[in-house]
Length: 181
View 1: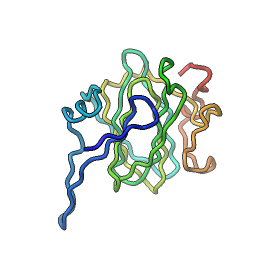
View 2: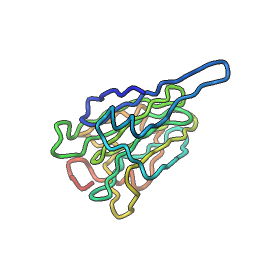
View 3: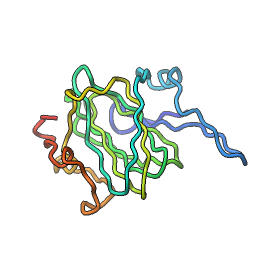
């Protein structure tokens, strides 16, 4: 397993070591001890979530706030997504910045999104199956979101606006400057 820094503080790309032969492949998707050694971050996850979406679906930008904040380790199990992390920690040197990465079943990359970040993804293939490991339990009252097309963030979702499929919640999320996320 290799850890690569992103331009955002505390946000990491995890690249597994993959062993391939004529039978297929094997890799260790997650190892708590190794993760903590490489990142210095808490690697204890308590909830796994899976979503399946069609081309053009954009989920985000979502977060959990307060004592229910969540760090996430995300990956794409089938298909291809454009995954985006946004630093919403006001005391961070990368506050208001975003990072995007293509996660695919083929590249097997994962992105560690720390607490205090917003997160979202857009589906670039006919379908995609997405995995989230979370270090805290979901709490509906602690949900937050930021508008996906906020002009100040100016995120490139890698799909055209006319092809985006959005929930009502995501269409009506507050702007970044409102700090009402």
